[in-house]
Amino acid sequence: MYRTTFLKTLILYWTLLCPGSSSAQIIDLSKAVIVASSTIGHPVRETAVKVLQEEITRRTFITLPAGLQSANAPLIILATIKDKEINGVQLPARAGENLPEEKPEGFRIVTTQAHGKNVLWLIGADDRAVIFAIGEFLRTADLSKKKILFDKANEIATSPVYPIRGHQLGYRNTANSWDAWTVDQFEKYIRELAMFGANSIENIPFQD
Image (cartoon, rainbow, N blue to C red; front, side):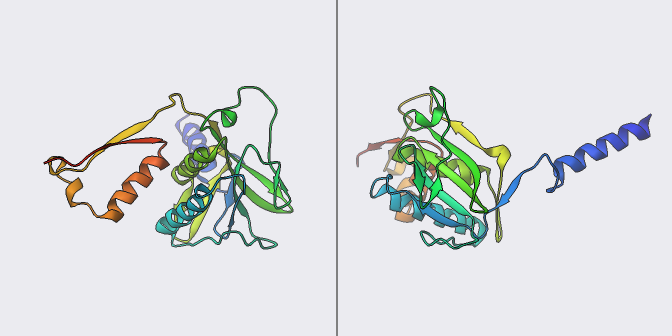
């Protein structure tokens, strides 16, 4: 009895942990090219690509190229629901009402195949939503040294519950840190707030 239970447990763990098991559909994006739709407004489009490149490099030591497609390279496509296709690749639209990716600041992350290569889509309802989709991807992808993997189990379509999601920044020495931070530290802090879905910041002005 115990031996049977042990074997069943061993098989279960093997199924869950083995990358080649049928329960996991993992795509390798380590040599992907980033493509951003022109429907994402300036300067958000350029900022989104830059942030995605920098954050991936920080975690993996891989700098993904942007814009230049090759025949065999997988794609990471930043898009909005306004798109029908990007560079000949059809947007994976779906039918239905009240879809999360169509609501303000909602987004969808989904994988497809096109022309024999993997495509990861980060689709936003608007410009801000593309940034939030990037944050979700960074949190759920397997990012390690020289490796960028994404499990289809982490595909998602979601939208925020509250229209205002903010954080207060006060530049003063009573916080015991902010008056000592560099510009780069502030930039990283504000960037990470956006990556986690914040869409507003309340600034407290200088005080004696």
